[in-house]
Length: 277
View (cartoon, rainbow, N blue to C red):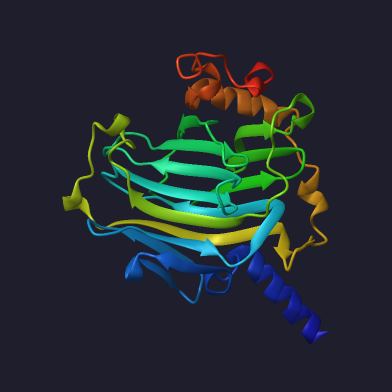
C-alpha cells in the first residue's frame, strides 16, 4: 500500500512540475548563456551583444500535444526574438512555429506563427497578446495530429491549420520533429519592421521555461510509439465554443494574416485561404 501511494505521489508531482529539463533537453549553442537550474525544473536562455542561446529536445515527436510554460523578456525587449517551435531537419523540413517579437516598454508583444511543409512556409499569422507575458509564466501549446494543428495559449486557441490534402494543400504529417527554442537578436526586422533597434544597455535579456509536458508519440529507431493517453489529442479539433473564441480572438488581436495579403501574392492567394475558417 505504501509503495502504491508513493508511485501515485511521484506521478502527481510530475504532472504539477512537468518533465525534468536535464533529461529532456540539451543546450545547443550560446555557451553559458543557456542554463538548466533548480534540479532540472527551470531553463533560462540569455541574449547579450555577443550571442544568444538555444536548446533542443532529446526526443523526436510524431504527433502529440506539447505544453511549455514560458516567461518572456521584461522591459524594453525591442529587437529580440524568442522562438519556440517543432521542426524536422533538412531543406524539406516541416515546422510549427511560435516567435515572440519584443517591443518597446509598455507596447504589446507580437506573436508570429508560421507552418512549414516540405521546406515551404509563407503561412504567417501575427497577433498581439491580450496579457503581459513578462510578469508570469503562461502555457504555450501545440496540438498536432493527422487532422489539424492547433496553437493555443493558456487553453485559448489562437490558430488552427486543418489537413486539407484532399484539396491539394500540403500538411505536415510524415516527418518527426524535435522541439527547439532560441533567443536571438533580429532588430533588422523584428520590431516595427526594423525601425526600432535593440537597446544593448538593457542587456542581458532573458526568457525562462518550466513545466514542459509532452503528451506525444515518440519517434526512435525508425518507429513511432504512442502512449495510452494519445487518444485524448489524436482526433482533437476545435468545436463549438472554442471556435467562437478563436473567431473573437482573431477579430480583436490578429494584426497580420497571409491570407489577406494580396500584394504579397499577386498571382493569387494560397489555396487554403479560400477555405480558411
